[in-house]
Image (tube, rainbow, N blue to C red; front, side, top):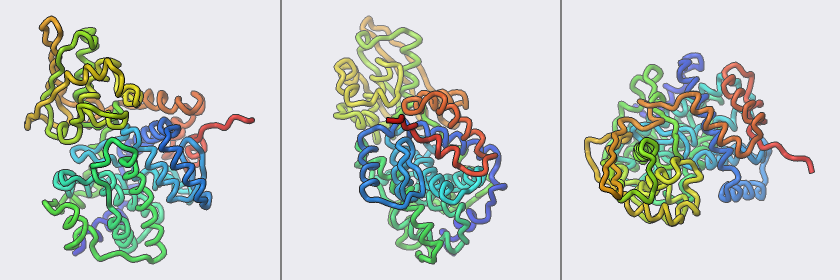
Amino acid sequence: MSATLDLARCVVSTPADGVPKAMLHEAKRTLINVLAISLSASPAKPARILVDWAKAEGANERATVVGSGLRTSLTNAALINGFLAHLQDYDDTHFPTVLHPSAPVWPAVLALAESTGASGKDTLAAFVLGAEVGCRVSMSVHPWHYDAGWHITGTAGVFGSACGAAKLLELTDAQLSDALGAAGTQAAGVREVFGSDSKALHAAKAASNGLQAVMLAKEGFTGPEDLIGGRRGFWGVLSAAGHDEAQLTEGFGTRWELANNGLKPYANGVVSHPIQDAVIQLRNAHGLSADRVTAIRARVHPLVLELMNRPEPRRGLEGKFSFQHCAAAALVDGAGHDAQFSDARVADPVISVLRAKVSATVEESVREDEVHLSIELDDGTLVETHVEHATGTPENPMSDAVLEAKFSDLAGEVLSADQADRLLAAVWALDEAPDVSDITKLMVKAQVPA
């Protein structure tokens, strides 16, 4: 038996009508989130570098890049849009694997839907199935794979990208198995690059490589018999310490891992979100200011120190992976948006001094989305709080209204308020739309006539 073929059969045999309305709604929420953060990220220097690179390379104009409106090849559009979706670390997170499923999957699905004229409902269903595969591949290697140093958004994300694209191109079981072979051999991304532009390249390449693998398989390009379960396959090589085969296909189509996905209220590593929630709660409840704080102490899940122990970040992107900076910025600014992770905010003397007063200790019983936090003041007062489930997690989800506010704030950095409103409305109505053209037109900054 082939684990890869079994997975392919699950995807191929699930029709768009078999995707529950709740999951289609969640797909709309993730697209709203992706478009918002991608628009916000589009003026950033590394994004401009990629756009300029694509222009210089030249390609058939088949799909649109968010923000800039560049039209380029399917794989180039997926690459750049995948990069934009992950650059700010403001995208969604699957629990408990910390996979970011939307950044690899939506760019591939959206590019292909634009090119083929796929219906809105088919596009949403393709995303759901692709994201589900990314989550299930992640669950099959959790926690061994991530603990070894792999960045799961790049490695598992490429399988999700391929399956989402394959659903739109109506690949057969055998073709999708071949596509997963071509995609899976490109599963890559190591955690050493966290805090640099190269982290977002993982989602970018996963989106582009998965889409390319599907297009090749459609024409007869072959892959191995079992890329995932083979002796030297994904499980054997990239998760040598262990895997759980049942997670891959058990309950596929009836139990949805995508339901364990959450949208982020803060633009940084998700395991610090409970800390930020707690600091902001205490800040607002007690009117705290940085000059009065002598210590911020947290009891946290082990991943906080594993992923985010950077007491002296050197640049903004590194600040996104410093629980010390996240806590300090939360107390000073009362927020954790991308603005709190600029080079200037990381170098700010008030935040820098406060950062040195932040500490954390691991407590094995504390969950990923939980924290016990105290703040000590200069008069000896101790204020404390317990965040059981951080904002944006499956147990404490971001409401549609809060998501819309996030969209308006971020999309409004690039689009007019009217255009942002029309784009939001187009996504909410996508399941009734004949195609995705309204979205791909509206996700581009309007050009002012010379």
